[in-house]
Image 1 (spheres, rainbow, N blue to C red):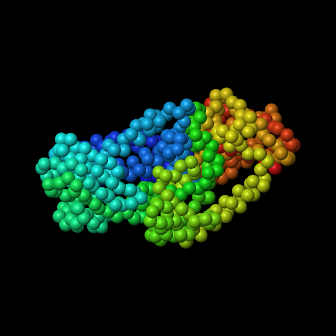
Image 2 (cartoon, rainbow, N blue to C red):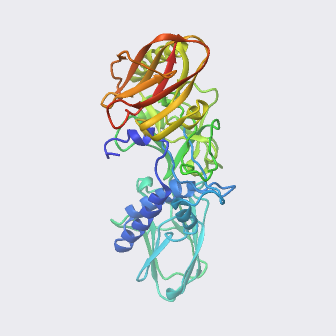
Image 3 (cartoon, rainbow, N blue to C red):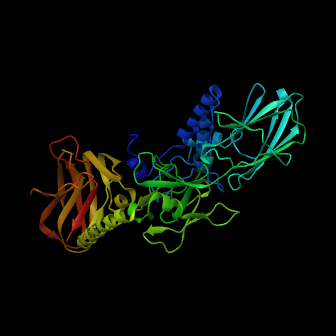
Length: 472
């Protein structure tokens, strides 16, 4: 998608591939080896915790192909006997490599880049160092020299960008405050001395809640605690294909798409929203939001680290609106809801071409047809034909299809084996460029099943058809 428009990322049920981030981490490591700067380590940390660590289901071990950013959607996990995607191959590698970027060395300097419990053996210098931490649940880090070199070495501890390069590290060596820290342009805290076995360095990483706007500067925001992206569970309904089968599209979460207006919207300015998220207790990374939310929730909105949220729908990006914007949005939603209710009351039967369940329910048949998605909607088109069996539950007198305004292809429709000969009524295009073509039926349909068939009309393809609706 364009770098200045992330709309498709918020709408799509697919989203970032694990393989993408896998390769970005390889690239980041190579860039860091050429130039050991903390901005590379900052990126590595974010990608590692928020995508890689989140990409394996912790109980059954399945791997994730797509991680949708669509609020209210979900991920699909691989299974050993059904799924061998690229993201399973790289996925197997991902979770063996957590130790690979924690430390780095250059001459007599040891870099500490990541805060992960670990033990380092630097054979060439005769150094063994143990790191103990509960990060990100706790910001305290302990480095213990278990084997000391004969000569002095420099220890460089990364100052993450998310700390704001705070002075609150409170670095101590063997329990005493260390005043001789040199803060260089490299954003590493630098300690140089001749170390002894048993020396202990402790420091605290100042972690706080921040609010980060989506990169195209639209009104969507994500919460972070330090570098850790937080997410809210939005339910466990309609998790179709949660564990992938062996179908061509088994890695895609094809289940129901929750309308974006039904996902919690945060009301207020960004600063007040950030200040409305609070840690629930000191021992767990669980946060509660006590600000204004629409639609109103029957329980407090809770957020946890995204890498700990599995087998559920989720929201990472939340739409934000101030009070005045929200009043306008409410009016728009009320108008849309009224129109949707009126249309639903007139509807006898409804098919969404290209969506598996609605098509299956209506006996889809086709030759030389294809499906796809556009602007968050599924479609089917053909240069042969496709057909359904409409379910006529009560008397119907009108048929309506939805296409894109700029789709110039024509379609011939056979209803009950009779071609619709009259010209359709064409609606105005909506904001996404969709129009409806509506035919008044020459004879009303009674209860039962009615075949409907679509073929090209003087063009190679039919237009992409997004909706077929039978009306009273």
